[in-house]
Length: 127
Image (cartoon, rainbow, N blue to C red; front, side, top):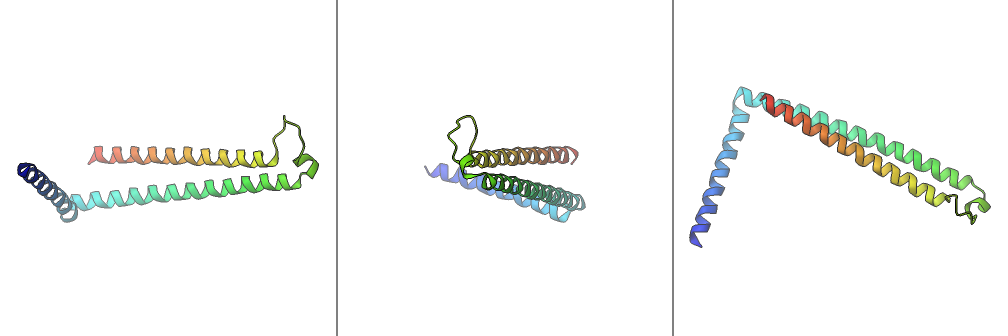
């Protein structure tokens, strides 16, 4: 049991040494500074793109939901409470619009994540 503790301590020490060396290399060498700068720029650009896209999707979803709610309110009470099973009621229409907007946001997030991964792979292949 004492040997297990020594091994994990040695592993932690070596990991710390490697991380420390990497930090020094990135902060002290010219190439390291360039790498850090490129990572910052690409990371900030990707984060800004993600935030912009999420904002666009949020605005589009709000607009769509507002339109659905307005349409539902504009319907006459007879239409809103009709027993016709073939037509959707206003609540179902709004629920469907929200679900569609949620699916679209999820697709866009997945697309942006893939784009970020691709940029990361290209970056680390070059450096």
